[in-house]
Image 1 (cartoon, one colour):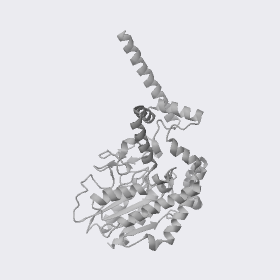
Image 2: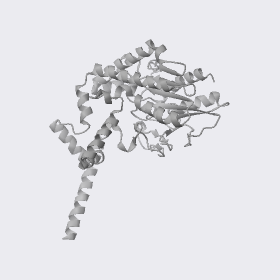
Image 3: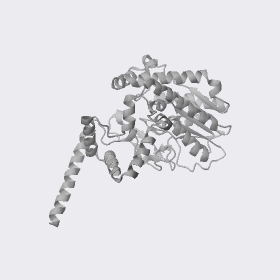
Image 4: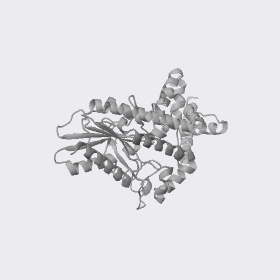
Length: 394
């Protein structure tokens, strides 16, 4: 009896593993997600200050040569704080700083982190650092530290800067490149919660549900780790119409007033800009660059390859570029019309949203609807370098 039980037990496990492998392989081949990931951010990156962040001491990764060129990429490792390591930087104790060191923190989302990178010298931070040391390295040793992470919005940037960077790491200057994620991160049904990332709200709800019902932990874990379980729930979703994943946010997306949402996002963005202005100082000036992005108004200036990216995504979601263009227009106008209010001696917001509009050589500036290529990263890093040089008069 005992042997029979063991045989049935292990036979079921083997059958399940085979089914799981087959489901995962099929979903991969069809280019579908294999498990549920809240806002494309995994729980293991949870951070109490910013909602999520990279784990520290992670190794760098270079895709193998046999992969197709368009899938080959480089990913930085992280230091003891979770900051990406690129350029010539090595893991070091940032709570100490030599007298000749000039330390700049570059803050933002995945465009700062760098997507589809060629090597560790490709990110914007590494490019700025190289320019500063090449031009002014005789008198100072410039360190530009990349703190970018995918999906970050201004409230997370404020938290990271105020509670970690400015508090402990002795920055001489802080540079922020943002804008795209301000539009991408939804406000949500409860406005008073909206100055946070969607993932933070989802994580809080999951924690609360788990504490009320222990079985919810298994449901959540299976959804995010077991492809067969995920597929079954997706089939139930499709057939019943009931949302089983991230229901509150997804139902809100379907019913929201888009124009009101844009206005609320603009309010949220400048609310956080004013906080950044208030924490800037003579010792640590802060520069915010409102980043370039493809939208309806610069469509004719895009290269043919970038137009294909635009057209493909616009076909999938026609509202994305429509309302992103409105958001960008309104933010640009506010920056232009309120320069004297928004800026001071140690804080500056600089609109570079049209920086990539001129493209006479038909260069590929975008790797997808948001992220840059080495060519556009070089253009942006040049602009940031010039602003830093102008302010500090090196």
